[in-house]
Amino acid sequence: MENYRDIYEAWLASDTIDPASKEELRALTDEKEIAFRFSSYMEFGTGGLRSRMGAGTNMMNVYTIAHATEGVARLIDTLGEDAKKRGVVIGFDSRNHSAEFAARAGEVLTAHGIKVYLFDELRPTPCLSYGVRYFGCIAGINITASHNPSQYNGYKLYWEDGAQPTADMADKVSAYILETNLLTEVPPSSAAKPELVTMVGRDFDETYLNCLLKEQVYPDVIAKAAEDLKIVYTPLFGAGTRLVPEIMRRIGLKHIYPVEFQMTPNGDFPGLDKPNPEYPASFKLGIELAEEVKSDLIIATDPDADRVGIMARDKNGTFRCITGNQMGSLLLDYMFSALEEQGTMPADAYCVKTIVTSEMATEICRQHNVKLHNVLTGFKFIAEVIREHEEAGHGTYLLGYEESYGYLKGGHARDKDAVVAAMLICEMAAYYSLRGMTLIDAMESLYEKYGFYSEISAEIYMEGLDGKKAIEDMMTGLREKAPASLGGSEVVNIRDYLAELSYDVKNGTSEPTGLPKSNVMYYAMANGCVVVARPSGTEPKIKFYILACGKDSAEAAANTTACTASLEDILGLQRGQLKK
Image (cartoon, rainbow, N blue to C red; front, side, top):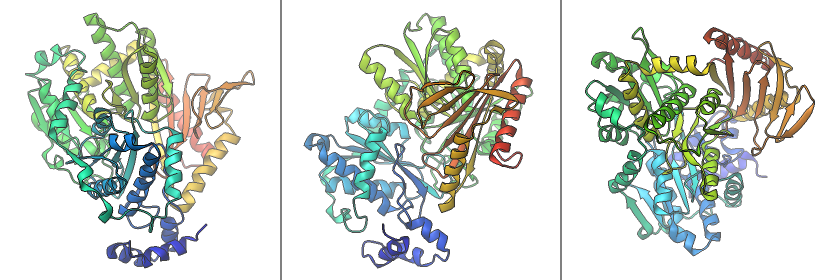
């Protein structure tokens, strides 16, 4: 294996690397930074690649983009001429260099004789997933780092069903990448075949929007509430800027108030440390506008418009965030209730959520006689359940979602879709407004109906060479020294998804988890609470999920606090370090 210093020097000596990148590298004075940039290549997982932008093999730049795409191209080469003719659709978000990276990926593919469909401007990530299916492509590539800070970018790969690839497929791509010399074996721009590129314009958007309009659950409520319903919307400088307001107009909303400063795509995300609708800080300008226009609802989408978050007024007129867990529960209950009221609830309905998503969904589905599937974190696993049902020819899919603010209704895509989710949220807000309720009121009514649940997620970033080992050590400790109790309640079940085993602590027995292998630890307590630990597959961080419940809101909140404190003690963290 080459020493990182040798690779660093090779970049400086190579005619492939541009002068500006070489200047950036020569300016580095921190040896640890040089080591971080050149000790490895970004790990190509089922979620693709993600890192800070800059020069180096472990960074996002035109060279690593081309290198990754060469791996994809070599795999497609092995699948024959038909796969090459089917082609690859390429999209990008508002981040700095995203359009440039997308164009370079297209050059590498066409150099291999692979047809390319290239979006002519930024589009929401779900458009990419839909585009793979619509054009019948063999694959899709999206240049995005989702909701990461501005210094990041990423590379998402999709396969022919519109979902991100399986682990086996990702491993094949990774193998082709690693066997290719980045400096000498990737086709240059001069080898590209522009005649193989089809630009995708706004006529494509019409087919996408028409698919979404078919996913309305209770269209009549918009017409009845449209005169009074006011919606504030912000794309947070991202890809939702055009299509989200457009779908709102098409369902009949009359009062849509965009946060103008944040409507223009901007990869610097001015004023936002994290362009993430999970965080209340992202809504600052939206709240100011909502107070001015007297709106009860603010909708925000992340930079690639696959996630959506909202704030709504409570009884005191104060804006409060609705979490991803809460929104998923609201959408489930709303959809089931609306379908039942109209007599159109399918007898074979099913929904899908992840194992780190609130167990409130389990109770909602139980009371409405809807089958609920639990899968590992990652929308590709939700897509897998949808595909299995389609292939088996049974089951009516209603909703799939993750606690991380991602939702999908409809079979048009195989990834979370903030455009269709925003449409449904507006429809649901209209439904409740006709009953004199905001979505905060609606959430409180759900607790009374289904029980009290309280969830938090927290993350610890561990960047650099030492960070990866620290994350591995933390997971090893949780695996080898499993806690006997958390939050004052006995641990009764431990699921080690890496070992693919579920342990019944009381009986000392084990059985398969029934889910794919993944580096996740899951602890279920006697009081019904759950704690999950999972390293991120795309970022240098470890995530923790505390899914608590109780006989009332106070007990649920107390159990959340107790579980969090126990976890901090076990990990040797300071009190409060696991707050989001």
